[in-house]
Image (cartoon, rainbow over all chains, first blue to last red; front, side):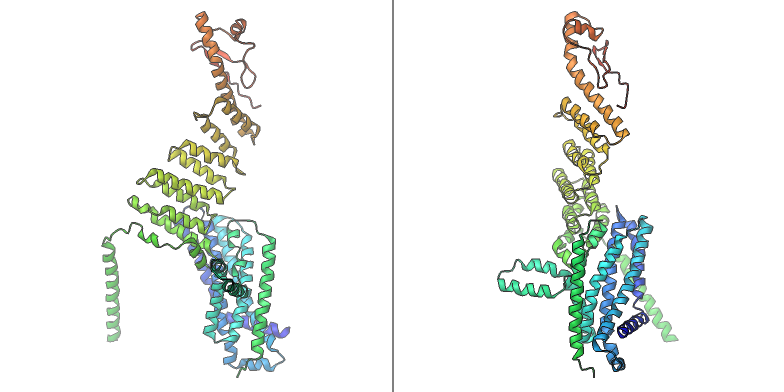
Amino acid sequence: MRAVWAIAANTFREAVRDRILYLFIGFAVVMVVSSKLFGMLTVGDETKIIKDIGLAAMQFFSMLIAVMMSMILISREVDSRTVFNILAKPVRRWQFILGKYLGLVSIVAANLVLTTVVLMLTVRVVAGEVDLMLLFAAAMTMLEMLVLAAFATLFAVLTRPILGSLMTLAVFVVGHMSADLWLLTRQLPGALTRAVIAVVYYLLPNLERFNFRTEVVHHLPISGAAVGWAVLYAVAFVVVILSLANLRFRGKDLK
Amino acid sequence: MKRTLGSLAVIAILLGTIVLAEVQLGKITREDPLGHELLYLPSPEMLKMISLGNPGLVADVLYLWSIQYYSYYRPHERFLYLETVYNLITDLDPLYVDAYRIGALIMQIQTGGDQEELEGAVRRLFDKGLRNLPNDWQLAEAAAWDFFIRFKDRETAIHYAAIAAQRPGAPPRIKRMVGVWRDKENAWTLDDSVEYWRRALEDAENEWDHVLCMNQFYDAVTARDRKTLAPLLEAFSTRYGVCPESWEDLIRVGALRQVPTDAFGDPYGIGLEDCGLVAYKKFKNQ
């Protein structure tokens, strides 16, 4: 496991060196500007708007990291040939993939921690409340990002950098639309069509399962079962996707 | 150096042209689209899909836009599609209290057009809000006051106030407000009023509420007794040519069995000027 942690730490350091965390500054600016601006523009409760924007921006910037990192995650090691140095050591290919994945996840987590702190501070300053449920929303966004990062890792192994990023972005978009598409396809005639779509639906992640933002913003009760199943759903997806990435990487000719 | 200065001069001239063009374009009055741009608003289902899990944020953006759009004074045509816009916002975020409240408020500002239709639109928006927010008494109270003040529609106002009073956490003043408004209704009898205030008194949540309900209950009982005793006093005056000096006069002629008492058990008096019942409200918090 030491090898995995070493690769993860190195991936994290590289991302920091690439100024990935600068996205957090973008988030902070969005929060400060929006809290000032919407205070002037809105009538009523501006805290709701600040939370909506904060949670959406938190998700957006985390997704951006996953998409961007997908571009450099594996290809940089292959192009600079450093992958041979790593794999020449007693490091197995699955350890390399897992290390890369954990590195990506840790940079997303670091970004999420920082953005959550900024959001909570903004809400504290504007509304005078400390909303601990924002931590829960951030945790569920992290769960969503665990799945997305797994796909980013898979696509980094499967394809060229730009295409990998686009495919990660596509998974994010489709993942949020799949539930609606599923409902729309219920209108379609033909059992076969519906069966095919059902298979596609279950193969793709439904990222809305991790979306508890409305409940958090409106202080609604949250079902423990929904959270528990969402955790299981995410873990199962991550394991499956990383296994696929490992299978592909194991047989990949890196020359 | 010369070329650099020349380039900078060209850039400066072009920037000046941009500013000038923008100023001139701003001066040209264009045909008012009369809200036609609103025709192209997508459906809530479509907006939910493209919000990628953030329908609340899209609702916020639309809400902020609507406030800016409808705040700018224009003739009544500007208020076209108002109901559609606020339906869209509240479809995207059904728990958005401000959208119901402010949407209804903006609708009420509208002075032109069919006022009946307008009242219907306000009512539909409030009803939708009350369905989606079953524990929100503030919205129901706002609806009550809007119908009471803006539309002078006491019946609808009472309907919303009664909803507000039944909701959890509603302050006792709303229940009192319903009672006071109902007391002014023609269909509301004095017995209804006494019964309403008796129950309100039983349900009083604090001392202040108790005092106020007691006051209303006292007045309701007095009004009912005044109505009941008035024919007896009038009959006595007609028969004997004078108003009775005390209740004993009525007891003596068999019109009454005992001295009538108020809600606190204290005897009423008789006003000799108008020969009517006099209540001596010695206020007690009982």
